[in-house]
Image 1 (tube, helix red, strand yellow):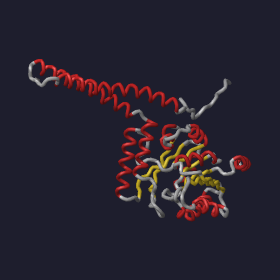
Image 2 (image 1 turned 135 degrees about the vertical axis):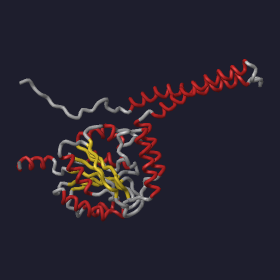
Image 3 (image 1 turned 90 degrees about the vertical axis):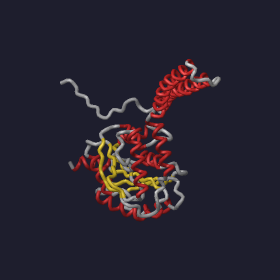
Image 4 (image 1 turned 90 degrees about the horizontal axis):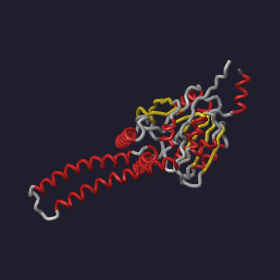
Length: 324
């Protein structure tokens, strides 16, 4: 058994890769490094920390460069040419991490490190492919909690029903899932949405989000709104369905209204010149255009789906049983 472990360590000297996107976290670097030193001890010195500085305007890269020279755990440090966004930074980190087990954590330490340990413990069991952190509580301002609950409630209702309440800030995965994620190289999409879309054997782990110690969140209302639209256009055809529904219901209404207006004109109840043909033309044309746009949009959506080159299927397990 000891020999097998030595061979495994030779192939994968650092089993647990932690990807940390860094943006405007200069004040957290010292605390972050100290926390990772402790985590490395608890993981029996098998931690690999991958820092991706996402075009941060402060001195994050220089501070990390100085501190990592004196750390015991293995680390990779990358600085992107500009701010590409946290999802792009995470993908960058996943692409260079050695694995075979991966976890993603924010640099602000609002997620407890015990959650990272639980991620790696579950993934290394071999029965779980994806772990996601599900917030049960958060020490955020009242307005932030209300807006976040509203946002994720709409998200779960109309975009991805499998998304946990409160969304996902942290996730972990094995090599198979990592490779599938990196294969979906889509712009203006959601990495978290892709994690849910992939399926696999997923485990949710509850945690309480900790208060922010330094700085403030860059996750503004407008970024949330953009994130919502990116997910709507990447994972659902809800706008087209709504357009067809409104057009269909409007057509039924216009037919009924047309019959009423025509009957009124025929009985002499409408005497205003030109009123009847104008109203009939407006009602019929308006809703028929909505249906037409919905139909055209449906074909455009199908074309868009094909241009994303997402796989039609992703095998999770495969065993062969030769004839005895």
